[in-house]
Image (cartoon, rainbow over all chains, first blue to last red; front, side):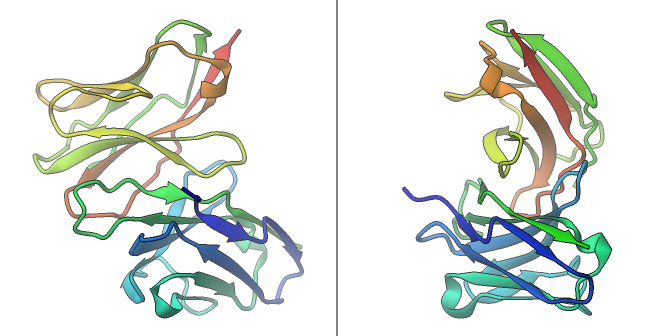
Length: 116
Length: 110
C-alpha cells in the first residue's frame, strides 16, 4: 500500500514570496489533514478536510494560508505572502472517514520550508 | 481534550524494555489515549491507542491505570530504530484533531 505522498520535500523562498505544497493521500482515505511543525515543537493542525469539504480550519492563518482539496483526493496548501515565521515542516496526513472506529492517521514525509 | 504530561527526554538500553510514562489526570470517560512517535526527519507514526483496557500490538503495549489518570507505553525490546520523539495524546471519540505536545525524546543507547 502506497503511503501519503508530498512534494516538494524541501523549499527555500524569500519572505513575501508565494509557495504551494502538494499532498496525495492514501487511496480510499476520506479525511485529509495539514499540519505545521515548527522546529522543537509537535505538529499543529492547520486544516482538516472530509472528502472535499473543510471540517476544521480554526488554526489556519487565513490572511495568508489557503488550502483546497478538489475532487476529494489530492490537496494543495498555499502560503501567500510568506513570512519568516512560516519556516517549518508542513505535514500532510490522511485517515479513513470520520465515522471509522480507528482514527489512525498516516503521515507523509513532510515539506521543509525555509523562508529567508 | 485532556492535557497530557510526559518527561521531555529519557534514555533506555538497547534490548531492554522501555517504559514511557504519560500523565493525563483530567482525562474524561470518553477520551482515548493515543501514542504516536516521530523518527527524525519523518512524519509521525501511529503506535497504539486504548480506552481503559490494556492493549498490545506488534509494536508496543499500552498499560492504562485503573483510574485512567496515567498510562505507560512499553516497547518490549528497544532497538536503536526506536529512537524517536514519542507523543501521548488524549482524544475524544469522534474527534480527529490530534493535539501534539512536545513529546518525550527517547534515545536508545547501545
